[in-house]
Image (spheres, helix red, strand yellow):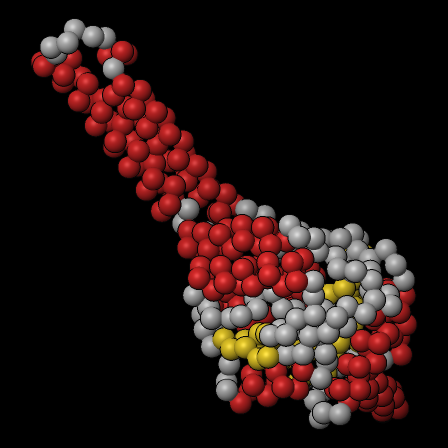
Length: 340
């Protein structure tokens, strides 16, 4: 019995030591989330630059690559890097679901106290991570957004439309950022864990953070380089879509939890207006009629009919939206093929 107990203790001791060796550290200083799509030429150079910069710091770190359905050999490089570097984590989607979904997955996996995001096209310099980290921590901010003050993009294809888009975003959101669409940003961990990025809302993560209660938002001028390999994955229509997404986001943030407050109010006003016209026509027909016309020949009749029909539809839309909000499916709108 004694030798059995000694043997069991020895086994448990070895098992504990083994688990301690293979378990991941309980604390991580920074996480870098990198969504990519068909960037096989850029990824090796980006990985080397990131490891050089991060190795020069005292941070414990992880690199989270999210393959948004690439058709090239970029995933093969990431898989190889993950086998040789314990700091590399990676997720591959079954198809292209979009940058917002890729960031959502990266945020879900991130363990660092500070979470960076950056694009994989080498237009953002990894050297900027140190400055963003310093600004975030020294000034106790929740979000620091990069500002590509000097852009190396086509003037009419990107630069001018981007300036107009950012101006509109500032006016509607009330957040004084010069470059909402810059992929290079730094967040406190609690911020990315408190928001959900879906659809095409990756441009407005600062606005999502603001509505979640994180209002300490700053920006930092970052270096911007011309694209070295390949071509952009976004067309000119992204600015129109971005503006429409902004209007959608502002509406959802204000009325998303109580859509009846919007649709019900408009519907009620229209119903009251329609009922008022109908009441006037009824009183006029019964007691004040002087023209001898049929009610259906009077324009007030059509105003009453139209406003009451529209009011009923708005009211019904609000009611159905309330039911939907209480029963909607919370499942993610992406599918993962492989995780490293």
